[in-house]
Image (cartoon, rainbow, N blue to C red; front, side):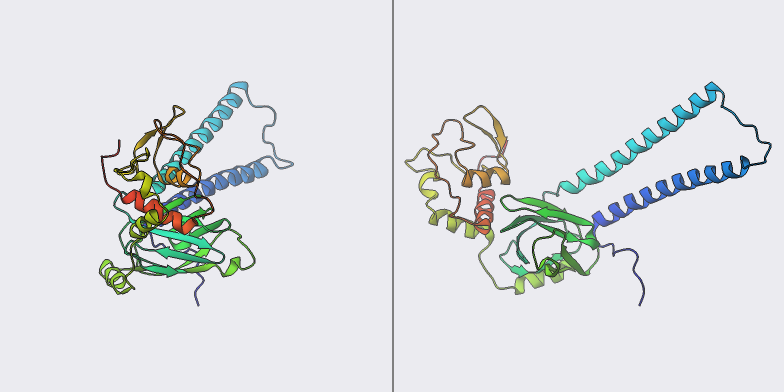
Length: 312
């Protein structure tokens, strides 16, 4: 049995993170060797009994050494900050064509929902080479979605959506962990991410029980809750039309302008009085307590799917 000192590298992000880690290791190793080497040199040269010249260094030499060491440290710190910051920003922006999978965390399991309606518990199947975007929320406490082989980790919070994305590069099975203490059975909250060839993933998805997709369920819920009675274009109630609302800049009654992203749509369902659209009366009731996190995912997915005037 071999001892694995390095996790498997199974995603595009993992290669970048490993490069950053290796770079930091090399830089800190060189600094350690430099400091240790100078310390050893001075210990030998200025040991008791030697004739080495002692005393203060000339003023110009002390100034130049201090300035040089400070400047080198500053530029090195700025370079490392730029490198790590660039990787972090790149990792936060999923490609527009990414496969969107919705994940709900619950003590103590992971529930995944694929675009075609296929469901999984404590498992996630994804295609190799394709960007995968996870939209996640929690039904109870804070959890954290962590796949060491992908070098990705994202907290999953109750009451809001969080996102992460990755592009798997190697087929195989990789462990999924919850990296945030979430209760008495936290250590048992895990699962397996299976990376498949694209054609195998397509076959797997087609073989799953066919269910209505998430936007379809959201549309049914939208109608069942009576939302269509106010927001339909032909409605007698003066309410905003939701066609093409996702991604659009929305002007509010208090003079602010916000983008209608997932967080805005979610808050508008639960706290409609907070961000009232300009030109409309604050008459929408709150649905807090009437819909759970899974229902919110359905409703937001439906609103995202609505097409209309291009977002601007």
